[in-house]
Image (cartoon, rainbow, N blue to C red):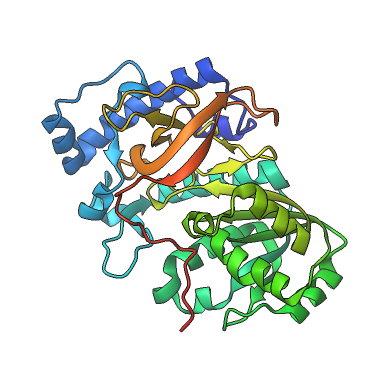
Length: 358
């Protein structure tokens, strides 16, 4: 039985258990593979060259390396139906991934993302603090990926306040005024992992100040490489964020431009979770066999959402491991996992959480 998006949206996004989910994912992803082969010439040529045949499970279906989206224009709908082309962030001189979206794909991504986020914070739009600067929305050429992320997440907030000014300096006075006005209820916060650390938390520590948010939910995303270079792990990060900002539920999450909508959110126990719409498979980098639970390897990510382009089964350049399935203490079903970051010698991908002072 294939997965029907409308049916899935009526249930908890972490409700499906192993056997039911694997059976439904396999049927849906096989159908998507057949569809994309028929409608995307590049994809069909690649699978034909590899002599790929349909497998019994999505574990047997072909993976596309994410880097191919930098080299080819991959889409499975008529070009005139493409409404948006999303690009990944990239460092200077690098090629960027291009993801081609039609109206259907844009709508399904938005619906699923809202379903996932609301399962953590509810459906009511909350007062929102963006731990960044308005500059990201004014200078779209320079900060397109970062600004797009903030714009997208802002749909879950209201009365939005930007905590940094245009010089990337903390607006302490403005932040205190905002909390005085909205601090009696729950507050939503959003930002990029390294930006929050460098320009908010470290600055507050330097000034010797703290805020007293009584009830907040912080979602943050982005690479950890610079933080690891500073010997900052997630436990240290969360502790020092709470010391400076207050009582926060902190949710890191993992996602990529090549598979928008299917984000993997960290629960209260620090575990990244697969939802009903997605899954993670860990592959041995030597032979691409499936790794055992708690065995490190390359991350393959699958999603039922990519219908306008063949991005439903992707091999990333990130290393991770599955920690368990259907038995996280938080009560959410599905696999939960840990990410270790980029594999060695992989192309450095630009991160939307970088900023260099002029």
